[in-house]
Structure formats: C-alpha cells, structure tokens
Length: 278
Image (cartoon, rainbow, N blue to C red; front, side, top):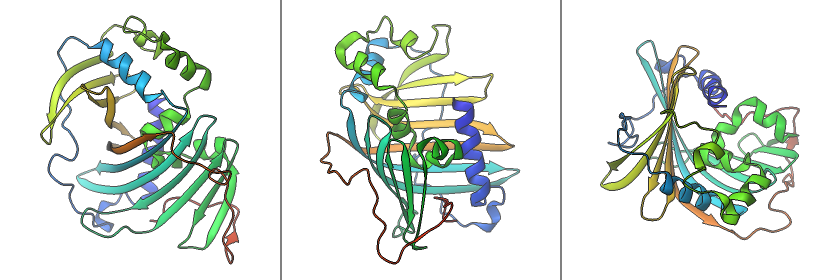
C-alpha cells in the first residue's frame, strides 16, 4: 500500500517538474514545518493508538482543512510544492475537495474541484474552464489522489463495515496492532516529541523492505491525529510528504448536491483532466 503511495508521489512530482528542480522556484518551508524523523525508543502506547483510531473513525462524515508539503530531492536538486486542501469526506468513497496551490506568504494560485458520489468522479479546472468525468477507481489508480491528503484518503478507503466495528468499541489496546494489519515485531514504535512548542506522541511505522517511514503525530490529551509524514525513496527521488491537519470537523452540513457536480455555463467537457496545474 505505502509503496504504491510513494510511486504515486514520485510520478506526480516528475510530472510537476520535480526531476528538474532548477526550473521551479519555490520558497523554503518555514522553520520546523516538517518534523525531523528520529528513532523512537519509548514503550509503545497502544491504548492511545486505539483511542486515536476510534476518534478518527467515530463519524461517517468529516470536513478536513489541511496543508500539505511535498519535498522532492534528486541528484542535489530539490523542489518543494505546497497545497491547501478543504475536503468533505463521507463513507462510501464520497467526497468534495477544493485543492489550491499556495506558497507560504503568497496568495493562493490555481484551484481545482474534485467531486465523487462514490462511483462517478468529476474534476473541474476553473482556470481552464474544463471538466472531466471518470470513476473513483480510475482516479485512485491515476495517483492524483495524493492531492486529497493522506488522512482523507485513509478515511475514504477504510471499509465501512470495519469502521462500525471500531465505533462499536471493539478496538482495544490489546488488538489494535492486529486490526491495523501490523505485527508486534518492532514495525511500529512510539515516542513523545515537541514540534513548534506543541507536545505530540508520534507513531513511526518503518518498512525497510519497501523503503518508507510513515509517522503519525497525535495530540496525547485529545487522542486526535494532527499531522502525517511520509518519507521514502522511489524512482531515484527522495520524497518527504507532510500533511498538517488544521481542522477536522465531524458531521459537516451537506446537501443533495454536495457529492454531485453541475458544470458552470461555458465549461467544456474533455476526455481527461489532470489535477496538476504545473
């Protein structure tokens, strides 16, 4: 699963110019924007992990506002891409996402709207006055889903039957690792860390065979996920992806049109459309 994520990110950044960073001029991220990966050595807090997973899946619908940073390095060149996401997700693979490229300290650039009713999916680019229609499965296979944010995609792809099991209180500290498909052989480690003056409990999942590390930053007082970081190497690119969750609100208001798209007047339908505006 995570290897496919790295491949998707690599493909996206190559198409964006990540393989030739000299052609792009992005400002450096603010200090401490992306946490430094460290070797976690504390006793793993499984109770907090179980509470965090249960809190993450408590509702069948959320609105998430987040900032995502892609940092890609290749042969001494480095590119950083910044995104702001506002997405309403609902079980059954339904979502409505507003994705904007936004460099720190500058006004947002081109925005894209992506809407899914669970099977059919629409992509709308107002800058091009174009839209396309595809399927959720095809969108997922394309790799463009990484722009939705790792946390939102994790929620969308979580089976509803399993979500209900978690909500019913059947996930405990004793079985949380097994339920998440992890063994207790050291794949997952945890420790307390401080980032930008805020205390977190950080879970690091390292898969040396596939070549990636996934880190989840949790507020230990509220058992809420605040940040995800994915680091790895794919297609000769060193990749660091950081998603900072600004707000995640349960049960946002929706209408019959939230997960449907009606093209504005003068908009042209095209066969395919990429979310990537670069």
